[in-house]
Length: 62
Image (cartoon, rainbow, N blue to C red; front, side, top):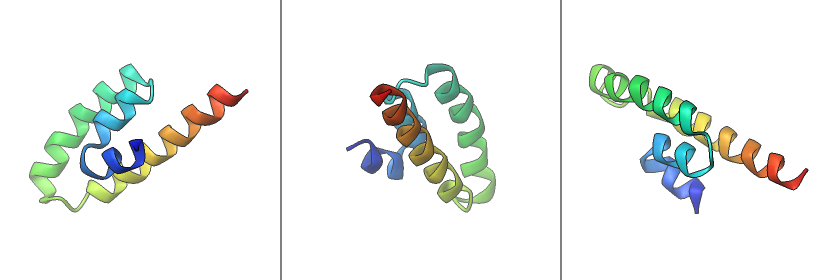
């Protein structure tokens, strides 16, 4: 389910996966990047969120 949230709101998906400080940092970078580039940088943030969600799952399994 978090992977679907990551498509629309990557900072929220990162927050829900347990990376609180990183989600704030991504949000601060994500908003101006979306405004300035017109959405061209959004796929980069989606990939970042997917990687962080996967890393959180791997961390929980160990």
